[in-house]
Image 1 (cartoon, helix red, strand yellow):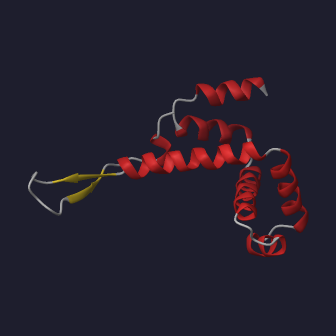
Image 2 (cartoon, rainbow, N blue to C red):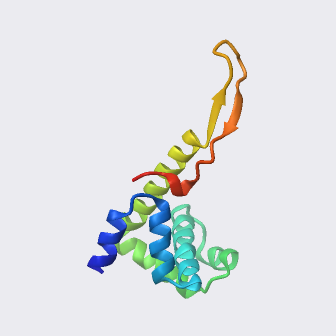
Length: 121
């Protein structure tokens, strides 16, 4: 576990993190982790457990497990959500650049080729 933590901390951007995750987790494991994060978000929004299970096509036991983990360690999921918000803000700021003369009211937006993986730590 220490090696995994160190590799995440040493990753310079999202591409490195994605390569590490792909190397150690199967596609199904990655999907399950993603669903658990979605479940936690919906629980925090106050959605009923049965509705979450139906909407995400997961078992009620999975929803209850995530709810229990969320109660035991709320900061873990909060960190995930805070970091995602931080990445989204930087992505939105850098994905397009406005170009045109300084006196133009409506400047043209140009896609810069920036992706979420390019967000630096």
